[in-house]
Length: 447
Image 1 (cartoon, one colour):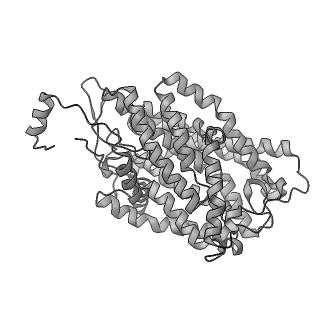
Image 2 (cartoon, rainbow, N blue to C red):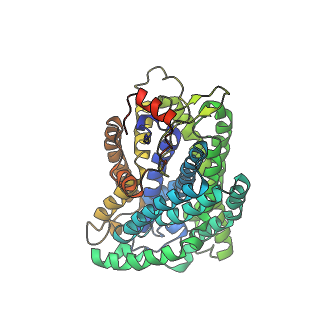
Image 3 (cartoon, one colour):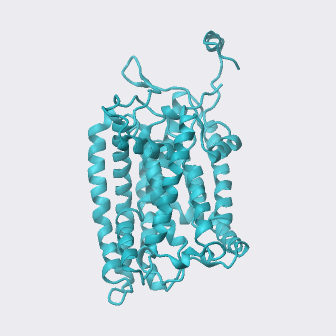
């Protein structure tokens, strides 16, 4: 028998960071829904109003190229948790990889359906393909994984080059965003999705850098065992967030000073600014993940799922997890005085949303599909960044209460259930010896 990790026993930090990343990804994905205005750097609109430009600047500083590397880092962290638990159980490497292959195949299918039916900017296909590579490299040791994170960092920068120079190409939005009807949108998205699947090992290889980094962080339970890593997490949070903010300033300045590229139209310069924006975003993602772990430990107490072993190490509990699940490693600090304060409730609500991140990610695409295309409300041609961001933020906030209710009832999200049902448990059945079987019966367990 395998025992799933109770929702109130999950590590709060990764879930909190994941919930924040969901909002970041939704806001960053607005560029995939707005259409009709010429692009400038970071796929923003050249002719933005004052209010829209203010929002563009905030998104460029805090969200763009920060949300998706954070999500990729947490994705890798989840894979690292699964590998760590696999080693603790004495599972053979081949069996671990077969389980991961099955899970990522299901995630790939979900991603393809999402890319074809809902949104052309899907990230799940790339995460599934590169995630399997990350799992494979993880079995080769720490040095190989660290080398992969470093070697693929320039590929991540290539994505930033595109963000910096996209305004020179004269684009006015994604083709699917302005499709006249839903079937036409599907007809546009389907070939793009299949093309993206075939080229994912090349085009998305930059995702391996944050994924591998997250997997390395998981080896030492960095985001789970906050008491043991508090000072390190503090340094990572301060320096990571600072580097992320400073590195975003140059390309953001282009949005303010020369959005039409009337003076700055040199591709090399814009490309370098884009690379800086992208790579510094990875530092910002590390800082946010570290800060979320500290914040969750302060405001989101939960029971321990692990207890210190006789040698002072952390003894693992038997549990299942998906690449978007992260079981907790240690008990959080005692609840602070006034634990019912609004900040604590907000932190726990965002944690709950992060625990159902797959369902929430797809739900955000459904919401945008109902709002922005020409065949629904056509707000993608009527609104700028400010109005669209307000709607996306409202949608994110509206998802918090259902997520909290799911957590209180001990239930997972609908798509999390689908993933588990199709892919099976991510934790293998423990071989049952006569001794363990007798102990299991003594606790009142049944097969």
